[in-house]
Length: 112
Length: 108
View 1: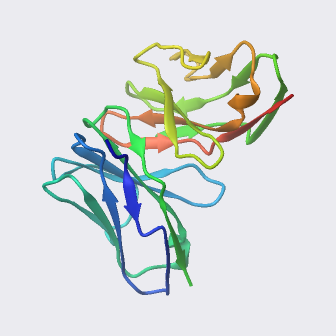
View 2: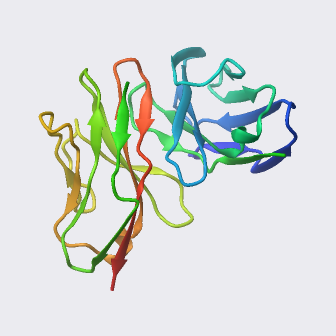
């Protein structure tokens, strides 16, 4: 059984660009949540997908969008990147919406 | 608005001493509370959640609705407990809120 994987590991973009981050959920998990973790802060909830539908959203602007595929893998898209978007982006999968979350290693995004 | 507060960014205790990591929350509904832990060079992982009422690695946490707290406790700290600990809340709208974390160092 493989755990949650995320790609890429690191990414450097410039302000105004768009980025797509990817997450493969653990086998048997139908729920994926995305978090942004700035340096020295706790994870901030972006949104959750359950069976391909958005199931909850945190306080992030619409330029943060997502997608979940039939195999329950997921993408996080961020448009019009800003310097403050520089952070570690974490993905977590779970067997159900409120079950234990299993986190991936994260993608480190740097916006210049 | 929901909020999770962990007042201590850093906490050091000696091996064998009791440890308590504080967590306070603000939420008007019925929250579900969690403690997550991140050991050095490892992924964030669930330590315990209040509904399961389990003791994991000797840690316990009791939800006190009157004081809106969910402090994490262990009677005898071990060196392997050194890690970053996050308290988290799940509201009825399926939104998660994490605290800023407490870095625990257990001194041998």
